Structure formats: structure tokens, C-alpha cells
Image 1 (cartoon, rainbow, N blue to C red):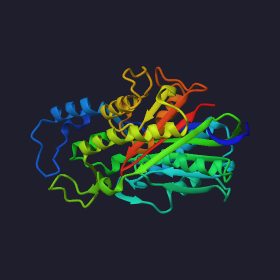
Image 2 (image 1 turned 120 degrees about the vertical axis):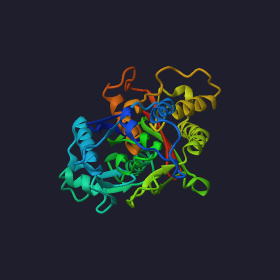
Image 3 (image 1 turned 90 degrees about the horizontal axis):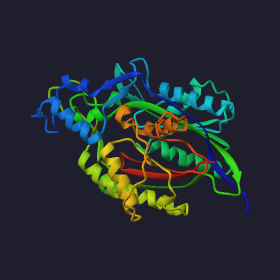
Image 4 (image 1 turned 180 degrees about the horizontal axis):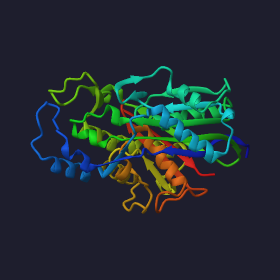
Length: 360
């Protein structure tokens, strides 16, 4: 059997913001519906229902002095430390995000220079051939960045790539929209490296789809639900129920497609890392995925979860979850040689992707 080039993970890192925001924080909020009318339930009732549906008990926000490129660089430094590689040997730095840097006192997206360029600058990398670019792809951005890096490596264009997912959703969350309680901040990073092997290892396959014809605007930016709000900020909005139905229908299909591309089935999978968007939704996706193979009993501990205490940090959820598993920071979850791991996400666009990885 001839040797081939594969992309393997040689380092992971994350930055979990220090500001804990429990659900009780929102007891003093004033919530309006999309129609601009006050919700007719008490905040305690709204929060209780929210927690039962999403599984979120608390989330993390960045402190006022930080922006997305800051926490992206923190996660990158953590990954570089765990990998023990020289940052100057990186061929690519890819940063996945959706809103770039947003300052607490000027809530506008700042895209220039790119976040990847800012991270490279913060890491003090001198090498001009360390190419830095961004990937805005909704919540699946980090998985898509990993896919791009895998193509670079397998083509021979690169030997090492740093892929980061970072977001500060607290800066674009409408304080008068109950859906805003989902959003959180955070950053995760992974270093991929080329490895030649006769046996398939590392990234085995990836699949993706973009359903823009009918579903492009399930998530969008709009004014506050509060009709009396005097600012002109735009906040993230979503059609929660329709998004739930869409994800439940399509995510399992994309995961199955990626497994088939790798010549595997769900019975070969040891871990499924799903974008931490909604606990109830992730449970339903997992059940539907196993159902596609006629499997009714889902193996215990196959799906690590962090949403209960970290919330939904968009592109940062999967790399952060990956880092926690790799470093044995989640009970009942280990990173074991030979295990097959699926990483899958869904988000604005609507975009979905899935990656199959064999731990070397």
C-alpha cells in the first residue's frame, strides 16, 4: 500500500472567558417579541422554558477590554504551547468568525485588517509566507477552516496550519430578545500537520452543503425588538423553530455522507462533536443520525456537551469542545488512539458541514 499525506491534529487550545453569566442575570431584563410587544410571561417563566429547551444554565462573556482577535490569539497560544512547534513554521493561519472585532463602546464589525492578520501580528510571527486569512461561514466556520487547511496540506501546499474559531456574540446580542440568552463568547484553536501514512489517519473525509435558496435568512441582522430602543445597532436574529426543523432534517444526512466518503458507518464512530447551539436540538440530531442506520440504542457518552455552562459561542464551540476532550477536562470523554470522531456544525447561510477524523 502506497503512502499518502494526511492532516493530523498536533495541538489544541481554547480561551474560555472569565465572566460567568448565569440565567438569573436575565431576571431583570425586559423582553419583547419580534412584533415589538412585551412578552406576556414573567421573566422567571421565560428563563425556565429557555433552560429546559436549550440546556443552557450559564454562558461566558468576554471582559470589556477584549475583542475577538484577542481571544483568538489566546487560544492560538494555548494550541502552540500544546503542540510545542515553532510558530514561524506555520504555513497558514485561518480564523473563522462572523462579526470580526467589535468593541464594547462601538458595536460595529471591524474587518480590516483581517482577524487572521491581527492574530499573526499578536503572535509576533515574522515569516511572510505564513499566509493569514479569514473564513466567515456561519457557525460551521471552524470546521470549514479545517477543511480548507486539509486541502492545503494534502495538496502539498502546506505542512502546518493553525485554524481558529473565535466569536464575541455578547456584543451583537439584543438584550430585549429572549433568543439572545443563547449566545456566548469564546475561542478555540487547532494545529494541523502533514503526516505520511499507509493507513488512513487524521482527517478522513468532509462533506458540506449551503441551502441558500430557501433558507439564507433563517439568521439575519436587524434592529432591537424593543420599539423604544434609540440606538441604530443591528443584532443577530433567528427563526428558532424553523432552524431547529432544518437542522434536524439535514445535519444527519451530511454526517452520513461524510461517513460514507470515509467508508464507515455510525457503528464505527466513537465520538460525535456537534455544534453546541441547543441541547435539545443536538440530542434530536444524534437520535436522527443513529436512526438513519436503524440503530435505536445510542451508545452512552458518545456526544460530549459543553453548552450547559458555555452556551453557544458559534464557531468556537467545536474547537473548544475538542480541546476540552483532548486535555481530559470533560468527565467520561477521552481522546483515544484509533477512535473515530465526527465533527459537525450548522449555522447561518444556511450552511452545514461534517468531518470524519481518526485519532493517530
